Every structure is written in structure tokens, then in C-alpha cells.
Amino acid sequence: MIAAPDPFIVVTDESTPLVHLHLWFPVGPPLDPAGMEGLTALTIRSLIRGTRRRSRAEVEEEVEGLGSELVTMTQRQAIGIGGTLLSRHLERFIAILTEVVTEPAFTDAEIHKTLREMYAELETLVDDDSALARRWFRRSLFEGTPYAHGTNGWKESLARITPDDVRAWHGQWLTRASLVVGASGPLDQGGVKTALAPLLAALPAGEAPDWRLPEAPTPAPRIRVVDKADRGQAQILMGQPTIAATHPDTLALGLATTAFGGTFTARLMQEVRVKRGLSYGAYAHLAGERVGGTTCSRRPPRPPTPPRRWRCCAMSIGGSSPRASRTTSSPSPARTPSRRSPSPWRPPRCSPRSACAPGSSTGPTTTSTPTGIGWRPWTPRSSVGSSASTWIPTR
View 1: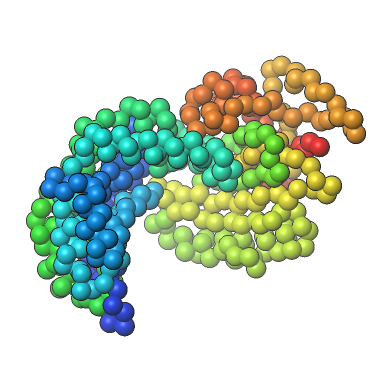
View 2: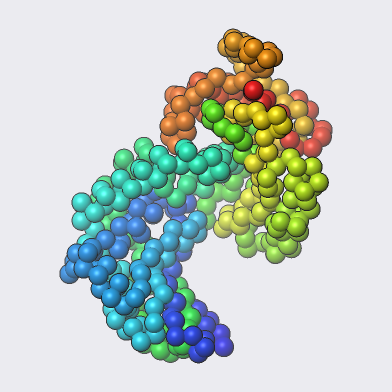
């Protein structure tokens, strides 16, 4: 039985003793204030680090005593907090959840600890080629809109956020007006509403967030390269903006995308990996956003035989030609040929550590002329042909 009166979505299942309970607020990273990208993630992650009545350790000990875990989630369109527990502990769990959501301590020390964790995650990102490619893909696709940054923002934006900003953000957006409750297990709608009555009473009324954001512009076909030295393979992404999640054709487009490249048995995987052995995997997916979305195909190319090293991790966005020309204002640097054969041109190195910082003087840039070491914007020679990248392996 499913009952779904707003804001409660309750699925009754008497066959299990477990209850899944989560509170969702339709606020996401796109609503971060300009210059303080990462504020949403920082606030929700700091929420469970103690209350006005209990320290962080005491909260964790109380939740662990219930055989549960209090978790937070930051998604593109919403943030959530909740957990999974035995039904007999529901009342105590809701009491802790209410205290955490409505009476967070938000001490300077805990907020700064969370900031350091987010800094460390941005540092780790540069060693994860797949995640780094997706980050630059999103930034390139939604450049100039609130959708361009990741959940953790940028190092520079995190440095601007103060504990007072976190407290103000919490008071503004964690309200009754935007609350959605999701629950399942041996419970019913009436029981959930009664159990959460103290939480609803403690939350401020507030206002629902305004998601009328600017639509993402359709970028001109181009290829962007993030140089990563000494890599055995590359990450290639191709895609473009598409319809919003609320569009009536979203389900049909999602089904078509899944059939094309959403599973291992889909046509894209069969043609690229099974028949030709060009890649370990090739996929396509549709990502819905409140304002537009993305359709993307990706593949990590398989190193050729004999083994060579690919010098870059890259993504192409909306490219429409199988060949590409390199735009540069100066000759490429000289390379010492190997003993076996002459070495082809390859982009000069840049510091991978700069890849997480926008506008870095040593990292990739978004201008039409090379302004940073190791970055060359490429444009298709022709608008005719299929979308593809020209890759230059080095021995």
C-alpha cells in the first residue's frame, strides 16, 4: 500500500522489521550563493556534528546504540538526512533526528573540520581520472550557470565561507515549507505524521526555494583536454545539454538512451568493446536537471597493442567531426624523439593540482587562446561527420 499526501511519501511493508526514514529538502548546490559554491554541502555535512545539548561523540554514541547510522546526502536537486533502523527504535531515532535538524551546534571547530575534509576530497579528485573528467565536463557544459560547479564547490569558494554563513543558510532553507518525508517499513502514514509532529512544530515555516534558474546555453562544438602525465588510459566524454526532467519526453528519451548505451548488452558497449575491443567499457546516460539536463556517452579507451601511454584525460562536448585541429598562438614545444621512433606532438604538461581551481594560471582555461600551460582549445575542422576526438598516444 502506498500513500503519498504531500509532504509525506510512505510505503507500508509489514514483511520487514526495518524502517527507512529520510527527510528531504529541495535545496541543492545550484542554489549556492555566487562565490560561495559548496555552502549547501558544507551545511548539511556539519549538521550531524553535535547539537546544542550533546556533543558530536554523544550523538554518534546514541545513534549507534540503536543499531543505526545518521547519514546526510547532497544531491544536485535536494539534500537529505535520515537512516535505517529497527521499527522498535523509531521513536528514539526521531527524537535524535529532530534535535539534530532543529538544534545543531554548528561550532566553529566542527565546521572547520568539515571544510578540511572537503578540501581533502578536492585534492583527491585530481587522482581520480573518471571523476575529474566528469567535473570538467559539467563545468564546460554549464559554464556561466549555477549548474557548473560540483557539490563541494571550489577551493577558493570554500575559503570564503564562514561559520555564520552556514548558520544563516540552515535557518533559511531547512523549513517546513520545503520538507518532504520519505519512509518505508512496518508503519503507516498516520503513525509517521504523529511521530514527526515535534519535528514539524520545531521547524520554521519558511518559504520554498525558487528554482527559476537560467537555462544552460548550447555550447559550440569543441574539445577540451586535461593533461595527466603517465596515465595508461584516457577518459573520453561526449555530450550536450538536453531537456529538463519535467519535460514530457524525458521517459522516452531515457528509455532510448538506456537501449543505446545504458547496459552492458546495449549497442554501444557491444560495438565498442565486444566487437572491436577499443575500450574496456562504453556507456551513455541521461541526467535530468530542473532546468535542462545532459545526455552523455563516455568510454575509457583501451591501450593499444603494443602498450603505449596516453598523455591526457579529456572530454569532448558536442564535437561533430572525426578530426580536430589544434588552436595555438605559438609553436608547440620541441620534443626529444625516442630511440625507437619519432615522438609525435603532445600538449605540454600542467600541474594536475590546479585542475580543481577555476581560473588557475597553470590549469585548463576556457578562453579561445591558450592562457595556461598545458591547455589548447581545439575546434572541429568541419561541421560534417560524427562526434569524435583525435588522440595522440606516446610510446
